[in-house]
Image (cartoon, rainbow, N blue to C red; front, side, top):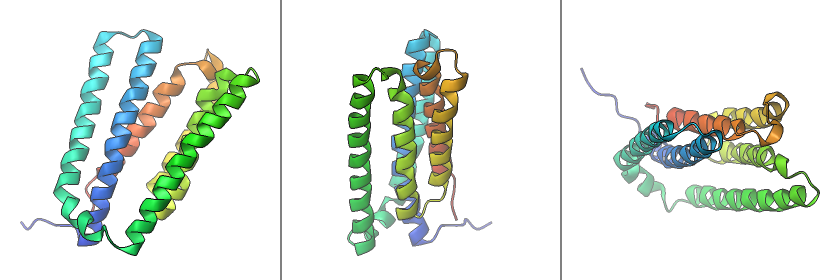
Length: 185
């Protein structure tokens, strides 16, 4: 039986998506640990989250290393430079918007809404990235994050300040990491 190897462009995309999966693994684990801490679930769950987060991150790193040469070949292309520039602009803009809106909400006495607002902004930042990186699953992640941020404050016992915001966001990011690490041909 002959192994199927992805084409060079697909290998570069796999390496790029593995980098994303690495970040989603780490940020997802951090958010899940915040949820764990705020709910007082304990050291056992802390350890389980850490192990799963490290396993996801390690898988992402290994996938990246396997396909990194193909990504390096595309590094100097105008399309890659443009995509990287847009990526940095979108990410910087995301954090600026979160900081500004977070301060505005806190100033006007709506500090409990900072987390749902942050989740919405994080979700929305996936929309231009889905287009730039030709990665349609980012649209699903965007919709999941925005929808979750709109719905959980109405249904969670603690409203917008409920720790479930961290749980849902962390799990969505982990699902995105798993999707990014799937084998592509």
